[in-house]
Amino acid sequence: MSDFVSLPETLVKEFNLAPSAPRTSIETLYFVNHQLLAAFITKAASKQTYYTIRFLVDRDRVLDAYRAYDYFRWVDDMLDEQLSTNAERVAFLEQQQLLINGGYADEYPNNLNSEEHILTDLIRNNHHLDTGLELYVRNMMAVMAFDAERKGRLISQEELTAYSKHLSTAVAEALHYFIGHDDPTPHIPSRYLAVTGAHITHLLRDTVEDVAAGYFNIPCEFLDAHKLDPCDIKNPAYKTWVKSRVQLARDCFKVGKSYLAQITNWRCRLAGYAYIARFELVLNMIEQDSYQLRSDYSERKSLPSAFRMSEGILSMMLNGITRGQS
Image 1 (spheres, rainbow, N blue to C red):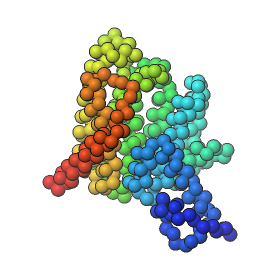
Image 2: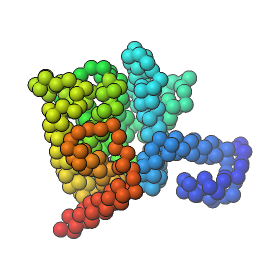
Image 3: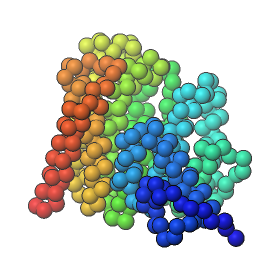
Image 4: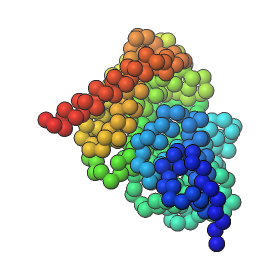
């Protein structure tokens, strides 16, 4: 028999819980505690992600959205900050892959740490094969594995393309799994292009920091063709490559917006447009700098930038409505 305790009114409001009685079971409070912890972890790491999940994600999938973000935030932190050798990173990733494979086979081992429990809880809630959640989990783990393995070496254009494909598949499928999952969406190639544009922009934005840490985002074929040092970011040839990537990202966003306009769920469209607008601000800054990359783009978080981003989102939403009515 369960013990009953009072459920704080603040938790009822925070998570839209139904306050059907002034008291609730210990099991329910345990559940809410885990939801609150997941939310706080997400908010501390990324307020944009936190508010996207809180206000746009389907209510029955909010906790799983927090779990998905928190687990891969932990994996990324482990690879970047806690594991110092390649052997340690490989062993860690192999263990996480075993957990993923086991979860989708209904096998859940004991002696897991709290972060690994987040993963198993996430999979247990929807362990059916070939869902958007599985595509997200497997492709995001592939992104993590590639980042861990590529440190200190050059990458090829083929590897860079595959890297973006894994990331764009993961994020796009997560978007559709967590927001408006009951509304059908087009399964066409342009489904992933908005995220591809965002990933291209993200790599440009982080280039200076990445180079210092031993990660090179420019393909070796371009370096060889121009006899270019991967650390020589100020070289005119490097800026030529940056310009080509900015244009590619712009093209991806243009097609991605057309795809989003076909989505019937307004929350999903809004999340997608906000995602694009965030990275278009960075492209604007790179163009203003004549394609000379720098280490800091913090002005994208300023109040004027927020207003410009809001105007861009509103414009995209209105254009989407216009297309839908034409």
